[in-house]
Image (cartoon, rainbow, N blue to C red; front, side, top):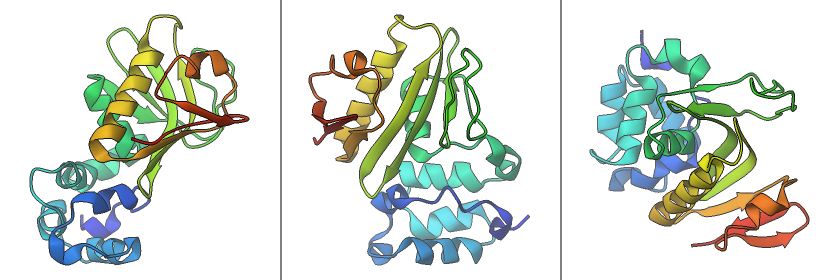
Length: 194
């Protein structure tokens, strides 16, 4: 199967972070076009990204053989970073508008679930133009520290990548106000700027 047959919906601005110098300044449309003209994930990654970077690994993982079968369970780049930091044993997307398995709460958006040996967390978070946008987080079995761990790992990722964080649609101000690094910017929004 040619790489052109794979899903390009998960290309986002974050992959532009570690492109080879001659490709810096390219727009996402240019990158998507190059991807469609590549015959394999290896060729695409070798052509565009600096080996050993997160972007290189991400490109190989997203469009390697078998990735097409996994695309229904694909999650955004920041989800992969969090899954690695949390040592998640699995991750998968859920259908927009679905309820999380541990509750009846409506979870709109395009979220995903990360699972560990004894925990599960639902997130709707992605990176757009150097900013992590988090609009939902729900943890199975509250008060076990996994939500705080996710938030602190998100901050560490933001620090390492020099990304901002914007938390939107906040209904649990008590949870988010306990993080001194988050600033309540009014209403239902918190932000962090490293």
